[in-house]
Length: 89
Image 1 (tube, helix red, strand yellow):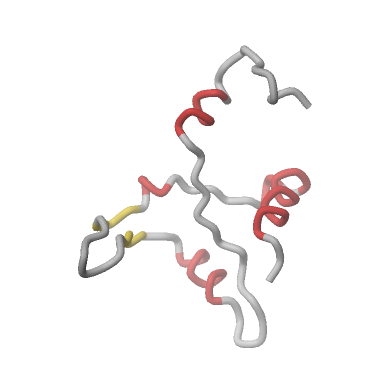
Image 2: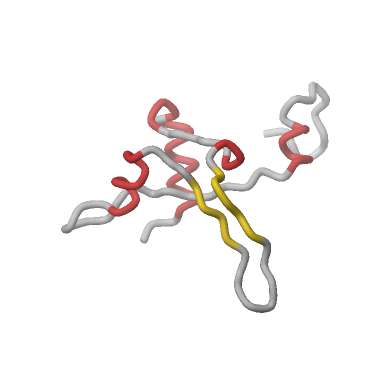
């Protein structure tokens, strides 16, 4: 399998119109926190194209579908006009 971060970076730079992003909060049907008996889980309602792309064809791989988390502080920094050291370049 290819490097998912490399694939995502390439897609965002070269083909941004082909990348679909859906905030998870908009598609969560059910969820449960981890406990002693089971892991945490989330049940999502996604478009059929996502399911088809995830499964792929009988002969090959499907689309690369990822869960990407952007920390709140990073998301807030994207709106700031102040450039901090390390954000240049």
